[in-house]
Image 1 (cartoon, rainbow, N blue to C red):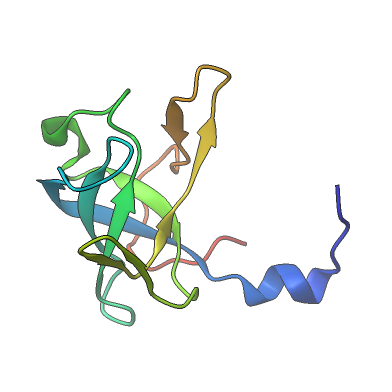
Image 2: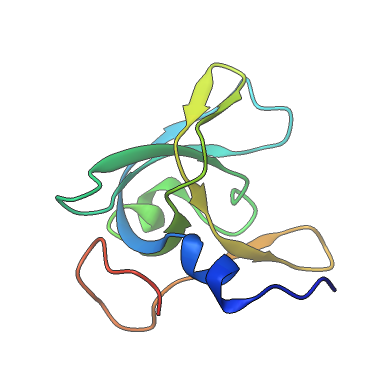
Length: 112
């Protein structure tokens, strides 16, 4: 494990957002959803690709709050331009469990 200092951590913009749209992503190499996440008025809506289909259906994702990195450069993933990274934990079986707040908070709040 590489150690980082506090300044490194504070440069990462981990923000809370609400998933407002979930679309199929048949072009993905690994099963994934195309997400639109609302990070509040300061940041706005961002698109992402998330390999979370093993544990999460489209219907249950709408309205769910997630934690995302919003200050990475955009990344082209097939036809999708990913504008944020939705965070999660990879289990031994490869399934991804989303990192989420345990209580509802205002979209756009930064992880402290």
